[in-house]
Image 1 (cartoon, rainbow, N blue to C red):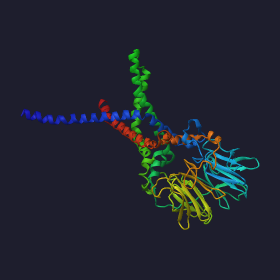
Image 2: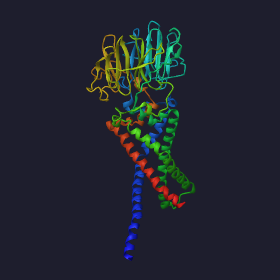
Image 3: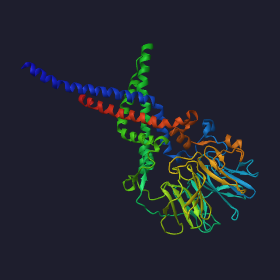
Image 4: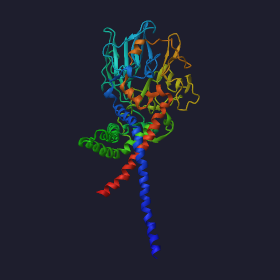
Length: 535
């Protein structure tokens, strides 16, 4: 009987012992993952957190530029690439070259050119980026659409003057002539000259938009979840706080790991123990590393997870995904066009304004109360939007993006390929030449402007002798701090050193950081009951 009782109790004693063993083994594994994955990716998480916070507030850094000395070679202009040349405007026998480096004047058909940016024209690398140039010989009017507003050239004084807009400075994307008015198109609004054209004063148009029961693409959802804009400015600020917490976690993790080792080495050599202030600093970092890591864990996991999918490697999995707009949790802005407009043209045949937006192509009249309607085009527009979008002649549009360049007959709903190297128009992949512009000269010759190649022929082959790029433009070129941080944030800045392998940095780094964060949550959860028992 005693033997039976002994065996009976031994069965019940094994269960709690095994439970503790399993728990301890899990803790050891998760602790190892959290510690060593975290230490290995400290620098990675540090630059991602700080660059992410900076990218969330472009207006604060719009006048800061990075010197050419600190910019990798692949970001320095060559053969008018990287949108250094977006177009050419003819002004009598002279021509004006405009693009990301500003505006330049040439009197010898482009063989030499000089800066044409005197007066109030922006001087920062971001501000002087000229998105469009408009010249009217009849009105003797020259306008420049830049990232810091619209500027008019005074021919008598030979300088530029800034045109006041109803709501302050905005990045102007396009200047359009409707015969009756001039239109300025920004990322969120459209401005129209009030009264006649002789005196340029602008008023904001309230363009209505037909509400469709549509779906929101997963790419947009992931983008807005990643930067917090899904909940407007409050969301961005909370995400900023999470970014700063992540940076603190990096600093505290290094301190917790490195300084005790330093104290031990110092004690062995000099017999000097850690001071009270040193121990207090470590206790402070250790305490708030655990607490802040626990409180912000879910938010950091969301940011890391969505960031992994905003890379070329994983983004393809989101291309065809969407959710119903009625389930979309984003704060609805009163302006239906807010930060959605990417390009614009004026259809003289139908007297309509056509807007290329992140949620489709819309057309409508500026002079009526009718809602803008969504229209379809017989071409594929790459995800970043159109880079060429203008009326070539009534009824014929030029539509170009990183997916190719087409001539569109809107009435017939047909398109002609000017440059398209991919056979599958729905593949979601860019063409071999990332089209950023198109230029047709008076002699009939046409050229493609590529993001990496610069000036190309209609086959996408690079041409180096068409329009020589002056060395003074190359030497004085700078990169806006926002773009520098963006290239650092998506790891594209390392492309010059490791080639296409840069595309693996964010997915692999994000995946291992995700494991590290979840291991940290598990560590805190496993150790928290022990603290309660001690109390």
